[in-house]
Structure formats: structure tokens, C-alpha cells
Amino acid sequence: MRCIILAGGFARRLLPLTENTPKPLLPVGGRPILAYIIDKLRATGGVERVYITTNRRFWHHFQEFIRTECAGLEAELYIEDAESEGQKLGSVGAIHRLAAEKGLRGDCLVIGGDNLFDFGLDGLVGFHRKVGASVVALHDVGSLAKASLYGIVKLGPDGRVLEFLEKPREPPSTLASTACYLFNGEAMASLDTYIREGNPPDAAGNFVAWLCRRLPVFGLAMGGIWFDIGSKESYAEADALFWKRLRAGRRT
Image (cartoon, rainbow, N blue to C red; front, side, top):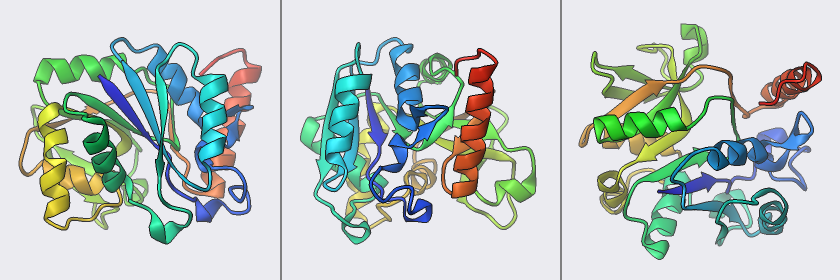
């Protein structure tokens, strides 16, 4: 199984924090956000290679990160030909381009590089093998008001994703996508069709919304904490919590 970490954005909403540092490498609890994801991957069985997608502006930051933080993993940098927001491939575009160039045809973990979570990935992998289909890791945000800020799924009684809605005015549930996906080979192969049809190449949630109408996609609610670092407020909240856990002697 391969893993793609999406880190190609420019994070304009976090300026000036991201003027010279890419968002996935901002420190939380004294460590880069991405380091926590790498910890989870290192503890997950069956991950053969990790690809970190980034842009031409920040590639050298990630090159150094791989050198210092990815011991024990086969990690590789994939550089998109973009130096500004308007030149980005978009998340789905980057997955598609990388998969085509590297010949990724089997199961593939895809994780947003600005995700902070403390759930293990073995449960996601095990559930994927049980249902034999693609799986989206979910987090219950606890209220419909909060749910309107995220990509929200509606699940069937068997856990199958019936609907995926991006920031809905009337959320059908409080289960938010964590930008952590395990796509099977059939889903990866369908990226060609998705792009060829002219669908939005930006948020990975757009691909999931399209995919769940064509192939079985399941959702799995994960426990623990989850932060989508999309604003200065969420970044400050996450940093404060992780420092608190560190002082309490708890490693996330």
C-alpha cells in the first residue's frame, strides 16, 4: 500500500505564519504538523512508500523534513510545477498526476498534510479489508452548526456513504470527513474518468462525492481528537492542546 500526503497549498488564510513556512510544517506542540502524521504511518503495517506532494515554492522545506523526520519509511517528494495559488493542480489533480506518473494502481492512503489526529490508521486499514471498498475516516464534530463548516457524509445502516456534501447549509449528520481516505485500486483507476469529465480538481471531497455515486465507499467514525488546521484560531487551539498534553506526559 502506498500513501500520498497532500501538501501543495499556500495557506493564505494563515499569513504571515505561512509566508516562509508551509502549513504542514508549522509547529504544534513543538513539532511540525506533518510529523504526527508520519508517526501514525510508521506505526501502520503495510505502508510501502510515502509520497509528499508539494509546490516549487516550498519543496526544499519538505526535502529537509524527509531527511530528518522520515526514518524508517520509504519517503519521496513529488513537486508540482506551481509557485502561486493560481498554478496549483488541486488535491485531486495532484493525486491523479502522481498516480499516473508513478503507476499507482492498488490501494492508496491519501491524507491531507494539515490534518492533526490521534487515532491510529490500523483500524481504517482493517475496515477497508473487511468491506473490500474505499473508506473515508470520519470525525463526529458534535453539532450541526459545526458540521456546516466541513465536508459531511450521510451514512447508510451498513456504513456505506450515501452522500458527501461540502459545507452544507443543512447537514445530514455531524460526521465530518477528516481528509484521510483509503482508496482501493478501482477508485484510483477512476481518477482518469473524473478528470476527463472536467470535474473540479481541487478538494478531494469533490472526488469522494462523485465516487460514492458510482462505487461503494464506506465511512468509519474514528475516536480521539481531530483538527483541520484551516485558520489561525484552529491552529492556536491545536497548539495549546498539544502543549497541554505534552506537559501532562502524553505523546500524541
